[in-house]
Length: 212
Image (cartoon, rainbow, N blue to C red; front, side, top):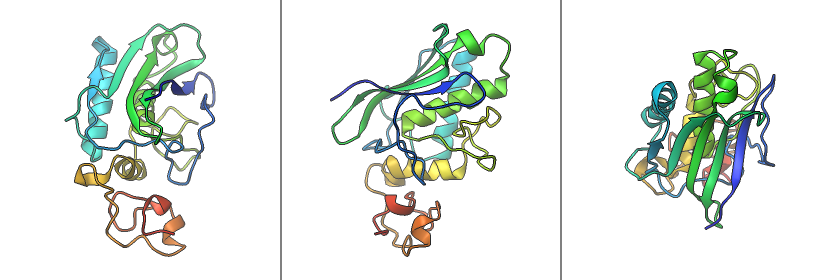
């Protein structure tokens, strides 16, 4: 197992990744994925930030096939980390040579977020986004992407169905650890490049083996 990758929301008008992650049509973070959908969450924060992180993780549980039956695969915490340049950061702490995430953490930087310049909506946006990175999602851009995975705004504390579909695909689907990609309806050039889960199996475009 290997260690040491990170993805951050930077303080400023636009947020950029600190890695060379490859943005794809289905906004999977490069090749990163889980080999199961039992992804437990350990909330190390307390008070306000404990509530924010806990509610955002519960949102991912409620809106995807990821469940909390695991151990502490993802840890969430908040602290005064100083003038690092990032509002929040997601770090893959352990992973395999097959791009499987084993353990990750999501950190909120109170040095910026507690300074009075950011609203609760912005705080929730950052928390939702960093947890999304831990689940294997990349950023999404553009004014029409009303999701916490949009790194050009801090106005959307929720993810959308597109994000949920990708998370389901890269955590094994709703079957609990299989490929989850066997409904046979994601075929043809148009359907394999439209950014949609056309057959409802949790796998989008080329993440679905039905696509060439």
